[in-house]
Amino acid sequence: MAMTQRELKTVHHSDSKPSKLSLKRILAFASTDTAGNLLYCTLTSYIMYFYTDVLGISVAAAGMILLVARFVDALDAPIWGIVIDHTRTRWGQSRPYWLWLSVPFGAAVFLAFLVPDLSTTGKTIYALITYIAAGIIYTGISASMSSALPNLTYDSDERVRLNSWRSNGGMIGYLITASFALPLIDLFGQGNDQVGFSVTVGLFAIVAILLLIFAFSGTKEIGTAQKAKSISIRESFRAVKGNWPWITLVLVFIFYWLGNTARSSTVIYYSEYNLGHKNLASILNGLVVVQMVSITVLPFLVKRLIKSHTQIIGLSLAALGQLIIGFAGSSITMIIIGWTIASLGTGIAVTLPFAMLSDTVDYGEWKSGIRASGFLTAVGISFCIKLGSGLGSFIPSLILGAAGYAANTTQTPEALAAIKFCFTWLPAIFFAIGAIIMGKYIKYEKNEGKIKQELEARLDPKTN
Image (cartoon, rainbow, N blue to C red; front, top):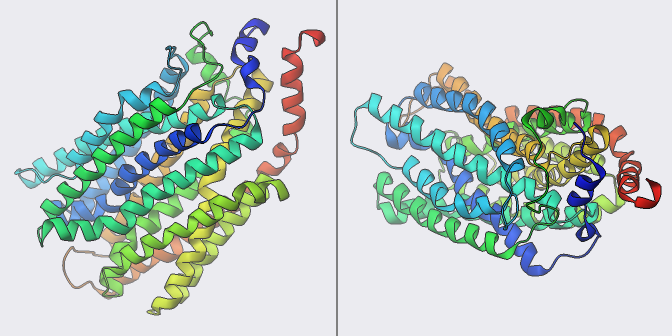
């Protein structure tokens, strides 16, 4: 049932007045995504290669692991959202999970990159268990990160600003793993990738744990007092009903992650087998730093363009960059140009949905009287990331397997063609579909001002 005026006032108390957040709080919130990307992007970018070329299981088995994990993801994101919506502590509703899950997260990802002395079947089972465990824990981190944003500030412009900093923090985490993971693996492994992966991921895990502890200590939630009424599971699902802005944004974000993961998980295959230059993968991944340019200017773009148009531009640039790579052939220069353009686009496309989902939480409250920030953001962010990144690796694994890919051998022309398709054309298709769907969001965004005014009017005792 809808929340009463007293309960709404508990959620939107005087702290909800727009104000600039301190630099410490901004950096602390940004560190959540630095930690998350440092480990989860290591997992999504290298796990398929690790499974096939280091752990020694087949590409079909690796694909099966990714597929099974997606069924788990269909359940864990909503569950985490419901758990967060029912969390009431003196530290807040979302941020305690950054402390509670920090060590389990680091340990789970570290274990996922170990090579146990087991049979091939045993290794496959071990890989399945550790991958699912790491994914479940990351969902808790990601869901609490996303659900915290609506409760850090109620100012929409400040949310975009705060989220831009968070995304830049995430880019730093991704840049570290993208640029330095392979060189560090070579350095520590000295030709033994099993040792190289375990030491490198272990170091990343320690850094991520420390960052999450800093995030917990340096942030503060507003409007999440212990006396606030927890919403029921039924009410959580009711918050989705009729929330078409949320549904639209979820679809767009899924296609973004499909495209981004398809290209990031196959760049090492394309560099090694199609171009004969494995280290190019590290160079290209390092160039993702240009995302920080588009992320930094994002608040200025949003002030001049509506968020929907900005997101469409980002997805279109990502698709264009992939097309340039597809036509580049063996020209390293053109590949770098295309990758850079695509990265500018993905910087926009990955950042805006976080802030826009906070607006869909407002829409859900306006329509149903239920403010399910944990549930809506957990499903809208964590589920999309997990589903999109999982399928973004699984679909290429199916294509490579069907084309006859075999690890550590000279590839057939069919396998090389499949690698190129997965690295170039497939991401472009996913990005383009996301841009088309985003066009449906425009009509909802035009009503945001009216919605916020009506929500404020409900809380004004003079109008009640």
